[in-house]
Image (cartoon, rainbow, N blue to C red):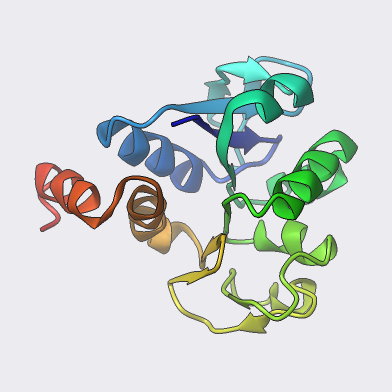
Length: 183
């Protein structure tokens, strides 16, 4: 199995990013945080500085990516949407029908690229208008085809478990939940 890449831009939502990293690593899956800022240290929407595992490198990411994940937060999600290199990687990944995930405001990145047309998806309330062509369900977590979307910080654990379920199966997700005293 390849690596899951989670992208960090200035203003990312730390609960949404780090909960996913934690849950995925507990499941024994490979995940790397990727700074799209050109700097290793990225500041969250609440002033928490996080050192990313790597800087954005489209070639390296495309070689072994299993899934791409976008955390929300503002201005994090809008900064992700503005990153041309990331946009190209996302379009290529979608064209190859590979798994993509986003939470909170970040599903708007996929929406603006036209990737959610005809899909059930969820996002932070008020961002539905940016999920162009999607059916906004309002669910805490939504999975449709190769897309997993989450509503916001309160859905971060369920979002992380949905990623583990997609890539490693429900039994592995349940095992991690039990270890975290959530089951």
